[in-house]
Amino acid sequence: MFENTNDAEVLEKTRGFVLREVKFRDQSKICQLFTERFGTISVILKGVRSPKNRMSGLFSTGNMVELVLYRKHNRDLHLVRDARLLHSPLAAMPDLERFSAMYRLVETLREVTGTEEPYPALFGALALALEQICRTGEHDYEMMLAWFLARMASILGFEPEIDRCVLSGRPLRPLDDDAYSNGFWLLTDPGGIALTGPGSTSSVGKQSVSADAYLLLCTLCGRRREMPANHRPSHAATMELSNLLQDYCTAQVDHQPHEKNRRIISRLLTEDGEG
Image (tube, rainbow, N blue to C red; front, side, top):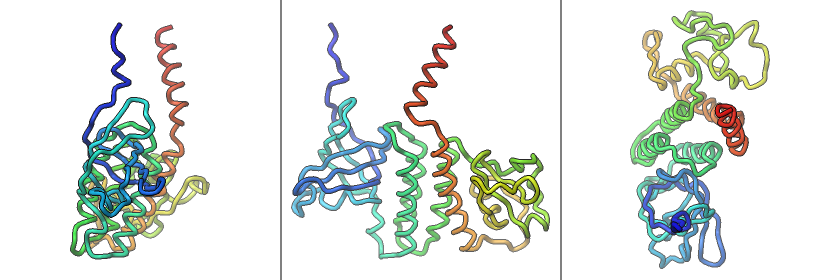
């Protein structure tokens, strides 16, 4: 008989982003991490709340760490052996806008990364955004957040359609005066931009989008548009877009099949193909 290696405990190294932390017993802590190699996992850090512990303060929400852990197949909780800090929003001077952007980034990641399924491209985008957000100096944190959310939508497969109206199929460019004045709608289903007017009166899964926010979305998605002369995205447009994308990403995840349902559907499709 062959030894069941799935029950073996393996020492692994990965990068992780702290999504949540909970006190456990007197000196320990349980954290939820979004990791580069293993998706979202829960870990326990024994004695980490003691000031003398070498990992004290590393696993705070919003921090990026490199950690070594004992990982076992089908285990819900993994023991952390060692870690070092990579990035922290608290390392730079206090900044309310930075903290706000970080809070919303964490909030969105909690919604969209709920299983032990790795998303290396998403983690790479997160690491890049976090490096910029945690850097000292003058930054537009809302722009970085909007960029990350746009990348998230693309990587996870629900990037909004921005070339044509998702209701009428009409091209959205060039941007005429009416469109610039009236703005657009961002629809959850079908996911994308729609022109205002008849046929778009339903309020279900629909958010108003200004022309400035739409143009910024096009830029972040890598599609250049004919921008009006001297047009530059305002802070208001950046804030608007980051709010829109946060709601859009969360709503799209709510529309995805539950993990158990996905497994059932996958099995039925496999059986149907074999039949």
